[in-house]
Image 1 (tube, rainbow, N blue to C red):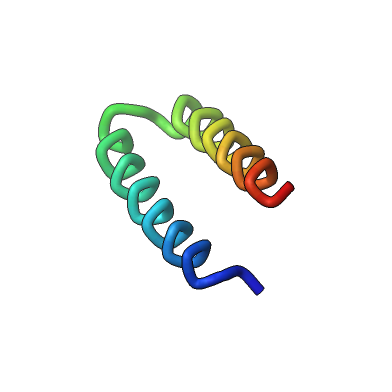
Image 2 (image 1 turned 60 degrees about the horizontal axis):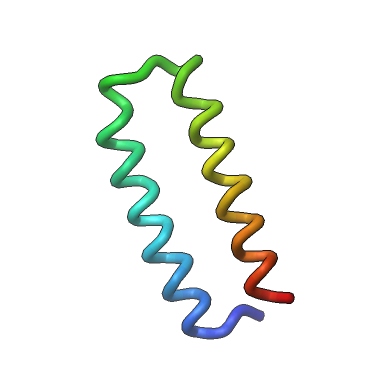
Length: 53
């Protein structure tokens, strides 16, 4: 089970990502936005994996 600090970090990251997506959404169509979101998700997952090693 993730530590309290990890859970807090992930909640804050989630808020920041949704805020960024809300700002980008009016300016991008789905074909443009989806690759950017997936790229960010992969980058975040890779960073989290490195922190757990």
